[in-house]
Length: 454
Image (cartoon, rainbow, N blue to C red; front, side, top):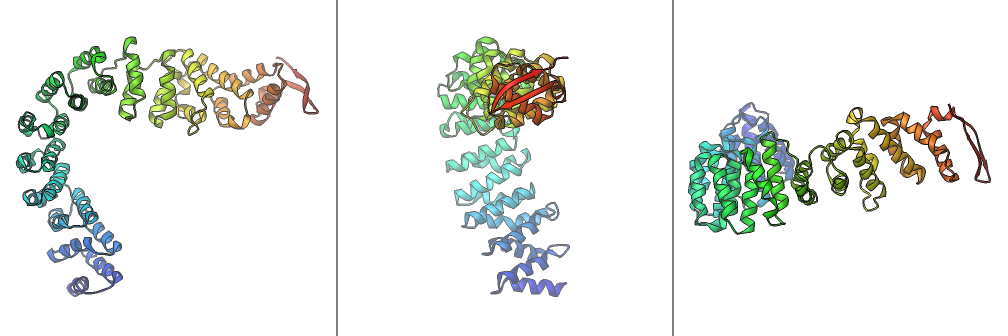
């Protein structure tokens, strides 16, 4: 084994081919334990010109990351000084996977002459460190480089360093450039002292950007139950641009405090603005602010959710429409969907399919109305565009499906009757196949349709 290791290390330090270097690294990896020289060789392999060598070295260092994690971190840490940003990032990814072992290995670099090195090391420590590592980062709050200060503030926030709250708050008065980062970090740390500070900042700051940062921070940490109520009553007084963010904060506080609060009618228009925000969290909060039972006036906002939200949010909304809202809401929403021509990315079938799990909970009058509305639309439109959703309607409520078709067979519009007959045959609707006794097609014209009633 010693000979093999010696040969492998010699191969890596010689002018060899990439294939030979990969084989050498593999032979080192096959050892049960990496000694100092082996770890150094594998870490140096991260800077190899061959991507295959880099990959195999990266895998060697991250596989069983809890084994020899301290030694691995100390071997990899110097690679973060490499001038190639891709190599630096590769080393950073490995150190993140090695976890807290990277803190001790990177701590000397927090004092490097290069501010970029200080910042990069601080960023990683912030992601893997704990409040016990606060003392390592605190000196960077006074760093001469603004980016290093930002990194320190963010790191303390990521570490949830409650023991650094006083230091961070102390910066707010004299370091104007850092204020948005300070508010975000405090929001991540949380606690009563932080909440009081953020509320005071929100009341006293005139800068809209800092107001926004304070609101966002409260969304992360606020736990005062009546705070959401206070913010709700103050909602119209906020700048229009900030209102969707305030909606998100109110909903976040309610969720954290297990409060299911529906916005009163006079504020629902602000919830609509939030729903149509480009920010997915604000849009979701706007929907939650409407409660679990919707009104017909909500239709435009619900249509926006149906056409743009992710499947989970869309499914939540459709469930509330079908199971918790008046029948008029589903009628209005379906009308909007059926008449929509602006969005081709998602079909009505996609939207309704996301709610199949709750159909058993849907009131009968609502399911009948949905089926009747869609089947009737299909009878007056192009069949190929409605096939998928008709399959869903047949599963949702077969009786309503058959009854609607049966009713449409009495239409005076021969094209509608022909379309209905196609649906009956294609979907093999037994209830209706047995009722239709005669159907003639003369020169593409329907001359007679007899419907036998039970």
